[in-house]
Length: 182
Image (cartoon, rainbow, N blue to C red):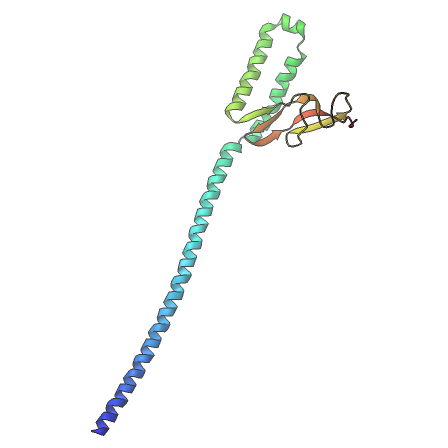
């Protein structure tokens, strides 16, 4: 009977050993599966973040193209505005009296061009004499000391500048006072 007990104990020990080995193997597989799951979850989250970033970037690019896509055409149209302005400025009283319809046509054309600009987000930057010089929106064409002004004051406006939404298409061309402080 003792032999049977010893045999049973030996069989039980072998079973326990086999069960422990199987459990250890299953535990190793489980750990490997958990590691693979974690890696796949990490890759999925990164892919999701990349997709979200790509969507945001595409959305931003679309908005920029919508708002600023016509900037080259807008820049090319600014000389047309300048030519109309120069034509009106050059027309003296004699020309205005002799050809009022022509002057009115040029004024209407200039107004319509400004309306088209406004519809597309193009606005004039028109500083006034006495305003402070802003290098973000103005281009100094010359500096001159002018009594009664302070250094950095605009003393003459040659050409208006233009903004396309919030971007500068062309700076306003101005003359700036260089009057030293008294």
